[in-house]
Length: 303
Image 1 (cartoon, rainbow, N blue to C red):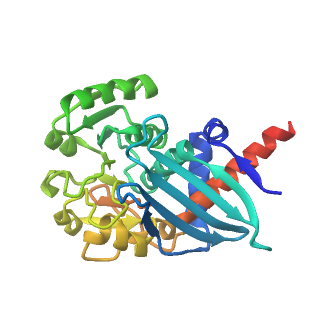
Image 2: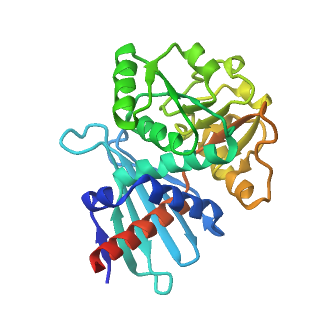
């Protein structure tokens, strides 16, 4: 029997703890991911991606779509389809647009908890969209953040976002000039749709950790290439990061965060080291997230 979890149900089930543990499970999993398929409808600006993979008893695909002309419905949607590994038949369908935002932020939080200095207190976020707020909340759970600096393309958007950050997290937040915000950051998160560098590499101070999550397609770019000569590079999936992620612009292959978590690779080696993590998102995150939501759903139904 196929289990179906609606968007409303998954949004009610997900929280930061569930998302972070699902992310950790995905990064530690021994599994297989397959090349991302990028498509569109008969109107090319309506886009979707398919990310598929398998690990253990999980096999399936996440379909993420972006329909920019939607008005009564959200522009973004996310649906995870799980297959029965024994038969290949449909096992579960999980609508997970809200949960996907938690999942993306959880990956960055996992990177911050692994790579950022333990005493990191100033978080700078470039971007004022829906995902950026999830990033602030998730990162502030794993480091003692006591100040948030906000950089936006528009001054009014940055002010409104800073107010939202304080209302949601209780942390003091303020809009800032990009150079000052980047220079002050212990942790810098970029959450934009940019196709060109957002700042100058020389503005990054020694010891900073950078998490970039906006690049998820050919041509997208948030970070200056000059930064890579000064930093140690990490990502979720090296092949994918080089193909569609931030490191399609990097001269060297980054280290998988999973290898750092298992002890097969070295993470931060000194307080002065600059670390950069690229999150392009991979299928095992979606599969473990769906499995976690299904477990919580089943637990709630049985009570």
